[in-house]
Length: 335
Ligand code: HEM
Ligand SMILES: *[C@@H]1O[C@H](CO)[C@@H](O)[C@H](O)[C@H]1NC(C)=O
Ligand SMILES: *[C@@H]1O[C@H](CO)[C@@H](O)[C@H](O)[C@H]1NC(C)=O
Ligand SMILES: *[C@@H]1O[C@H](CO)[C@@H](O)[C@H](O)[C@H]1NC(C)=O
Image (tube, rainbow, N blue to C red; front, top):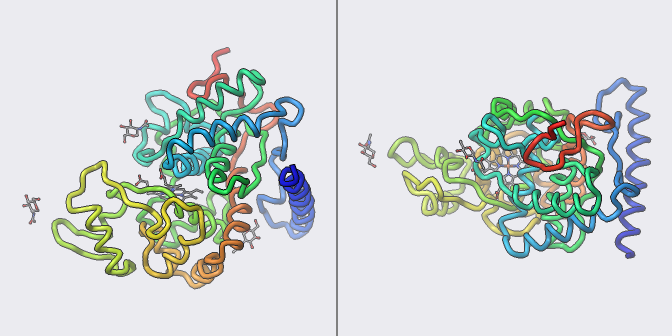
């Protein structure tokens, strides 16, 4: 209970802070996400579905307890949803041309968890809670399982979008992108350098397919190591990902503590143990490298991650009377 109250107070404080920062930005004419709250709120469902938090948490925790791969899956699902056409649950739609069928979907998963949560919420409060909000809440709760307390707070009030197109997934950054391309990809979504470095810390958990790393190890049949890879670490990657690798082979994104949501991602980067070229790229810019050094401190990492997740969760959201509340997350409502 104390924790609940603590969060509520912090949520209120964060809101006032956002308003204060927003007002000061309006004067300077700077466009920032904090300036215009897109219509989301903490406890959006307080009256309409008061048990939403406990329902999402209990379903998510039960599933994560049985499957430690789920936190990675669900966190990445939220990222992909938000980066492709905004956080509108378009990633969940099942149809021939949907985002799900695109190349970068490979290790996206967790759809069954979203379905299970939605089923319970439809019983508790039919037609009220959007699939887009479920994705955002489940990502938080999947990570929070290890702490038994939320690492970040989630604004709600998103509504579900009507379209899902695989051709839109081109907005997702490539794991082979260099620093400037990554920065631009985030800037296109209203996110800045701080957000790029903080959110990349999500790679402190989860897996990548060998195909996401083998270009850093081999060229054709020859060994050809990316100079940004530590040689002992490269040998480990090569033993998990031989040339050629079975398409089902994977590596841990975090070389040291793959299941723990901690700041070791940043320490790994400093030790040339970033799994993806896009991870290592964060050490190739002076300002980014300074942030990497700062975020090796877990307290700073959690604070920065929370703030940037909130910004990511606001990307092109549908609120108010836009979009719809899907009855079933895999299909648009038929009227
Ligand atoms: C900076 C640009 C990013 C790039 C280029 C990138 C790329 C990738 C790639 C290639 C994989 C492995 C997919 C595979 O090979 O199967 C991956 C996994 C993952 N990504 Fe990212 N990502 C980025 C940012 C993010 C962000 C912002 C988040 C969340 C906030 C995130 C969360 C994850 C998670 C949790 C996994 C593990 C998935 C699992 O275990 O199933 N990534 N990412
Ligand atoms: C992901 O995309 C591939 C095509 O690249 C497709 O074969 C596969 O079915 C998709 N995965 C899901 C979960 O839809
Ligand atoms: C990124 O934006 C946040 C506010 O959303 C701000 O606090 C931070 O200083 C910005 N970072 C950079 C590098 O401009
Ligand atoms: C690379 O290895 C494959 C067998 O794995 C072989 O068929 C091919 O000829 C080799 N290519 C070169 C350029 O050596």
